[in-house]
Length: 301
Image: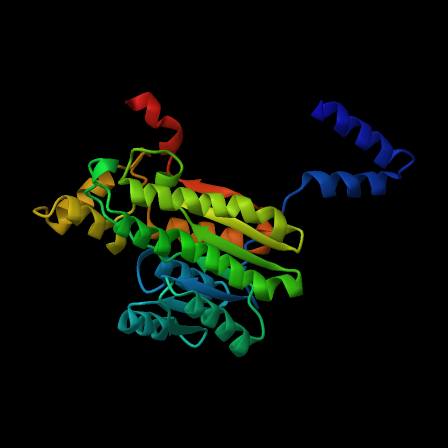
């Protein structure tokens, strides 16, 4: 069907065309630019939540390196200020507790006040929540509510307030960190899995509405990485294990052979792609970065 349709289009577009015109048409359809662009976010303004360490920090560095002006937010104020200072004049830090909608709104407003616009909102901040939940019958709903507030509700608030300033300009990109735990069940404690599934659901629920206004909404679902965030969660489950032991355990979850290991920079580069104009037609997508874990897990059990 696709090949027949393409033949019809080619006949229609090339009928009566000169050789030069035909060459131009074929070049337009079949060639792709491989030129490297070191400033893929030149002129763009971004807000990243949870940017003081781990994936958020790596993404902030990648965005600045590619020409963006970035406002880093976190609740780790000293660390966040240090990271912003390290990244230079195109980075600024603002404290933000993402469980407070007003603080998310303030971070968005700060970007507009400083730079006149907001092009990219990366809702990355999150918590692991209680990791030692053996059964739903022992689940603390207070802990569950806290996990949902930080991971899921904050993502919706980030989408809401980014849309508030992006929709009038008819352009913008919103990214939310989900997880492989939100794609398949049984890999981590239920509160975290449920919260990340909710993030994916929010992206899918809102991408259509915002896409009609030129604003893209996507998710990134990383697999296990030995970040401070991930190691804290494992330490709760294995309090007697050393940090090096925990790092080896995370590395052991690696799905790829050949010595390839998932690193924070891999997620940062995925966010860079989604934030760039290269992804101008990518909307409502969950970019899973897991080395094939979510498609092969069942075949290994």
